[in-house]
Image (cartoon, rainbow, N blue to C red; front, side, top):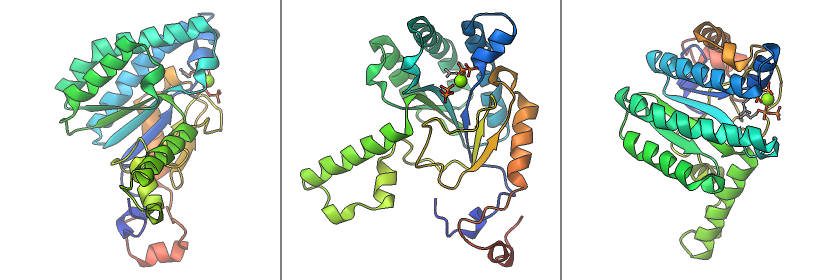
Length: 254
Ligand code: IPE
Ligand code: IPE
Ligand code: MG
């Protein structure tokens, strides 16, 4: 996305790309004296609702942080439970996503996942690759620092093989090698669960994203909650370094 495009200097329109840290599943379950797994299962239901709603609202891209590169530090039984839930959810949802013209894409280092999970991920991407409604991006074993490092690695490899000259390293080139290449930058970032941090999510890509934090725990986050976040987004003036007057004088729709 180019920051010189005046149409992008306003948040009056719907966000094209919403990126969400779905946090608070464990606390949601604990509040009900239930095991954390119960919260993760409820979290999947919230994902379904949000995907349907974003597709209805003609949002172009929804990126969901499902498992961070740091989440392996959790107790082994929770990690296994999450892997099982991930696989089961893909098995039951891919056809449904496909029928709804939703394109599925994964970002993150998938080499650490089981073979069956990697296979299902690849199948889901292949089966839905020509779909043109919402693009649903699932960040799994994702870390923003990993993303920037792997982009650098790809660029260095191209320089070493002579495919690219050393001077080719620019922001644009690095951007093209990030896992999110080809997608518009996130317009709206949402974190549920009350924490106000980025937790190694899309570090590079969030440079000019509008941030929205809500105490609502992820399983309770519903259509109204998302609508509230979008309304907050639409009320903001995105300046990308310009002054507020410059934005207004370009007579863009606010
Ligand atoms: C987010 O909910 C889901 C994952 C990280 C997989 P948490 O499991 O972090 O829930 P809390 O933060 O402990 O409540
Ligand atoms: C971030 O949530 C990752 C996901 C939601 C998948 P965490 O609950 O793991 O984040 P921290 O550890 O509290 O920062
Ligand atoms: Mg958490």
